[in-house]
Image 1 (cartoon, one colour):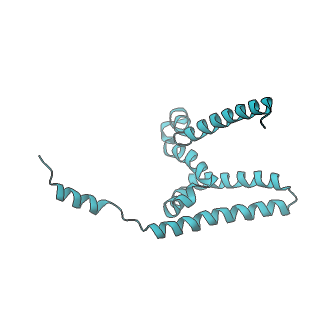
Image 2 (cartoon, rainbow, N blue to C red):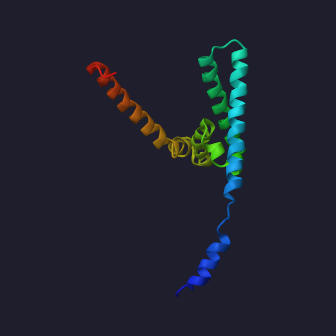
Image 3 (cartoon, helix red, strand yellow):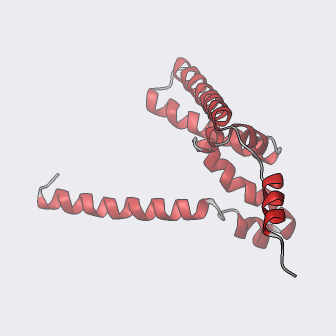
Length: 150
């Protein structure tokens, strides 16, 4: 049975969501800005509590990651991502969400085959290539220092 091209095109146009680019940009800006503002407030609070800048930055990252993981587990962060798009996915909180979300989704399949196998579905390649590229760059830097380039 041959499908009528015009009817198919009309169907696709009907079911395809329409996005307002400028509204999406504003939402991403607001959500990303809110995450960064929270991070800055946490960092400032840590520094005012007596931590040096580097230690405060480390603890701030831990707080943001933990918050993202908890909100993902409570099914709140996916709603933030749906609203804010890239504004919620680009910061480190988005990376933590991408690690935890598959684990939450596949927990019914068990500890090993569900959580263990699926937890790095999205983040695994990022971790793998991040470690690999940093290792290669470290070797190149070491060779450059040994030769006298750096």
